[in-house]
Image (tube, rainbow, N blue to C red):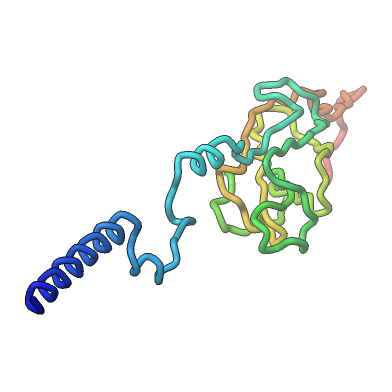
Length: 189
C-alpha cells in the first residue's frame, strides 16, 4: 500500500512539474520574472506608428522662392518645423534646438562640422529668422544651415538650398572725358 501511495505521489509531482513547465514556457517563466522586460528595445506597431506620424524636422526659405529674380538687396526669411530656435551659446547639447546660418555660394556643412564665420557664412546667433543681404548681379545659391548652440551643423538634412538671380543696376562706367584739344606733350605719370 505504501508503494502505491508513493507511486501516486510521484505521478502527481511529475504532473505538477509538467504543468508548471508549460505555464513557465507560455509566460516567460521564472527567468522572465527575474529579468526586467526591455520594452524600449521592442518595436510595437503602435510605437512605430507614433514615431512615423511625427513630422521630421526641416528648414526652408519662406522668401525668396527658388529660382526667383531679385534685386541686389534681398530680404531672406527662414522657416523651421519640428525644432526650436535658441540663441548661440544656449542649449548647446540639446539636439532639438539651434539657430540659422545663411551660406552664400557655398555648400552645406556636414553633420557635426562647425559653421565657419566669414563673408560666405552668415550667423544668426541671436535667433533671428529674417535678414536683408546684398548680392552682386548674377546667379547665386543661398543655403540655409541649421546648427546647434555651438554652431555645429545638423547636416544636410537640416539645410535647404535655393538659387536666385540678382538683377540690379550695372556697375556705373567711369566717365571718360574726351580731350578738347590734342595733347601738346606726353602724359606724365
